Structure formats: structure tokens, C-alpha cells
Length: 412
Image (cartoon, rainbow, N blue to C red):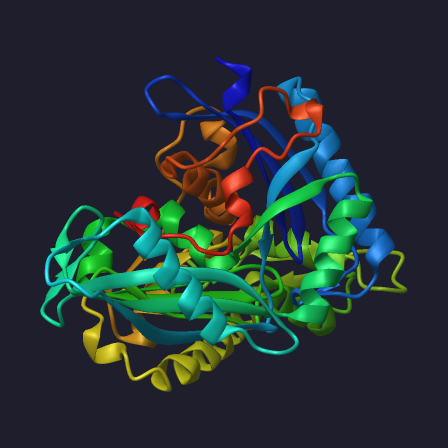
């Protein structure tokens, strides 16, 4: 494997921070060659609350990835999520003085720059400007207009923005952890790249990435992204419900959820007895497993209700025919697919990262959708300029500094 094709992603979540090192081989395939993970500290529902704790967690995750990969990590692509994300859909056009103008890359870039100027908002940072579709001469919708003839070039865009203070706070903790963030990617965009199939996006699909502190939503209709949002509900609420009901620590509640939890009470074949140690007790106390499952099911239904309310306000549900793809750490709860299908009244599948090699036993779980998705986005972008050494301090994604980016290399 060549050193000049090494790429790094740092996924900063509410529950964990994951660092993944990838290599793109001569055939264009992505190989995962390094992995690190630490418990996330100092983040609550996607919002940084204790910067120094976040810095320590990032350093721990990066250090592990350096050890497993053998590379010194300097640059990385980093995710951004949380309720401070916003989106808007917009369109722009260019007209030319001739009837058969050949569309160039510069024309496309000029169109992107025009919509960027229009979309700029005070106190917000633009994270993505994604071209959903191009239209030539008010008639023909095309994926890539470069080299085609026309007198007018129009495009519809999906724009993702982050509140400026949140953006700068995230950038600052990453930089203070010794990592130069060369690009930020919104969680739902990265996860969608990792787990969705083209056929689903063509038919219309809803991606739900339910993590520890947030749920990231992306909706695709007719092959184009139409909606992205991050809402502050997630698996940590389930954990806290368990902790409160049984008067145990958050760590014990998380362990109980992972070891014995399922999403549907009807799935319980026999009502086992579980031993717990409530706060202040010297001896164990027995509880029924049914009580634990009842707690999990009730909170999951509450989370689904919040999501359904958000979805009902999008006016897009009549264009979604491929159902829901559920990913993120909460998607690991047994029988959650069945509960989600009953709640949402549609088909649901569990989305796992795809299109990579290496570390398959570790990364082939829903909680790594964002991490693998960020690397997949880089692999699919033919415009990326990579440094020869991770420790040279060079910017390994020179062209990613631009806010203009085309959707064709990520989603087609």
C-alpha cells in the first residue's frame, strides 16, 4: 500500500470518539488500516460542554489509531452534528451569450460560488453545498453537465450550515488535540454514504442514525438529498431511564442495556431474574428482565414519536417508497427493527457500513456508519490531493478547502 493514499477520519460523538485510518489501493478500493476509540467526555447531545475533556478523549482515540496503523496522524476529516445544524434548499442559474455554449468545470464552479454567496448567513458556517440536479435550458435534468451544450445552466442545491460558535468550538478542540481538521462533514451526509444503496435513494428513503445523544436524519427523494437534520434525542436517554428506575449508576445501566436489553417485551421468551447493585446497597437486588425491557421499549417509542413529528413536518413522506434505514449505535438493540416497523408503519432495515476492507469484525456495525462514510466520501472524490506522509503536516485534502463540491462523486 502506498503512503500517499492514506486518509484519516475522526468521528466525534456523544458516546464515543472514533478515529479510522484508511488506505486507497491502486484499484480504488478502501482498506481500513488503523482504528482507535475512546469514551467521549465533555459532550452532551452533540454540544461541547467541557472542552478539555473532549480534547483528552480525541487524543486517546487518535493515539490508538496511530498505534494500530503505524502512522503519525496530523490531518483528518471531522464530523459535525447536533441540533445547531441547519439546512436549506435553493436554486441558481447562469445564462450564456451563445445558444450552444459548452459547459466547463469553471461554469459549474461559478454556479456553486453564486449559490454560496446567496446562502451565506450571519453567524453560520456553510458545511456543504450539494448539487441535487443540474438543468440545461429549462428542460433537461442531468447529473453532470460538464461538456454538454446549452445556453442556460441551472442547479438545485442542498445546503447544510452550522452555527458559527458551535463550528468554531469544535474546530478549536480538534486543533488543541493536535489534529488539523481539513474538512468537516455533517453526520447524516456521511452516514448516508456509508449505508444507503442507490436504489433506495432513487425510490425515496429516510435515514435515521440514532446515536448516544442525537438522532441524525437524512431524506432522499428521486436520487437527491432533500432534508437533513440532527435532533437531541438518543440512546443515552434509554440508559438514564434504566439508571433512574433501578437506582443504579449510568455505567451499570449502560452495561445492563447492552447485555440484556431488547426492544420488544413480546420478544421475551421467559422472564429471567437479573441481579443489580442499587446505589447504597451492599448486596445485590433481583429485578425481572421484563422490567428492563419495558423501560427500553417505552423510551424507544418516545424517541420514535419525536422523530415522527419531525418527519411529518417535512412534506416529503409521500415521496418515500423505500422505507427507513436505521443505523447508529441504538440500531444494535435486538428487535428494534420490528419495533420501528410497527411504530412507523413502513419497511425498516438496519444499515451497516459497506464498501471497505479490513477491520470488518470491528467496524461492521451501525455505530461506525459515520466513520466509514467519511472515508468513503474521500475515496469517491477523484479531485482529492493527498499528502505523501501523514506526518509532513501537509494538507491532505487541498481541494476540500473549497466550499463548493459536486454531488456526483459521492452519490452516483
